[in-house]
Length: 395
Image (cartoon, rainbow, N blue to C red):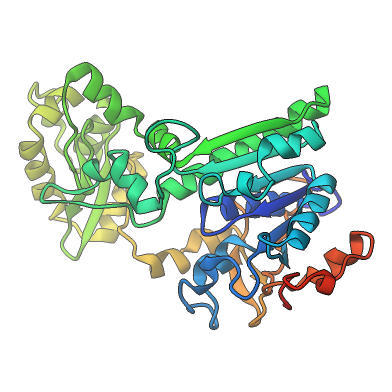
């Protein structure tokens, strides 16, 4: 890929009053796409995700993941000076995105209505747990709580025990819907000159992802079970034993079944066997089908079986751990790793999962707390740190 094309969001400025995961994920992608992202952080403490752990050269893994390419300004938004600076920054921004506690931005005088009254062309995005209104609107909302409240935990885990997902999917869903909303609002503004007031709820974002089990519940009256690695509506779809480990097999349709039993396992007699010929029949006999496939898969080593599945076009995968992801040959073959600068030195980072043919998206440095405070204040007609007794923290 050549590097001479313009970045998609070059010239766009985003003011981010954010913390934790959902908001920072959205704005990190905006930064990757070329936007200038100014991150407002609490003096002395910063985004509380900075202290989640110290896994990355003494820095928090969440923060390093979610905050590259941003500028950090330390502002006490409870002070008059901090609010004035925030308003000045909002007046120069294209987008203001926040995910503070419910009502916090309004109490600070930085709510969507107040900001849009100053500049109608502004895009203001508010992320919250449950949205504005309704009996849950004031509740605290973290990823685990939303996964539980939305029913996601009820279908995740093993038959014996519910579980949340291993990554914060409610936060990620919310951040990605916010990203999409910002991009679409900017596109509309480009055509109409009109800004937008946007709300994204973690609960509703997760509820959207629950479409399949929700429709089954509404129209069949049935709660999907917790299936572990299996699938409530497809069979065979699970990890199956081999002589030395296991391989995941996911047959999506009846053609896939035919390829599996005929080409992989050499059992053409099973293709048209009425007990197994359709997915509905296989699901109704799941235990029997799983036992049958396990008896056949156990005759092969993992690599041999994976090769046979690939050759037959049957979807399959190895059950990797995270080390297997880090060392995955596909990431190396596609040149997905880059160096990202941080206050504690360079670290490895995955390139954004979106490729433009004419330009490589940037992966800017992770900022230290308040690193850009002086430079940003200097842009605002000479404002300084010492303008009042609260002011901004010294980075």
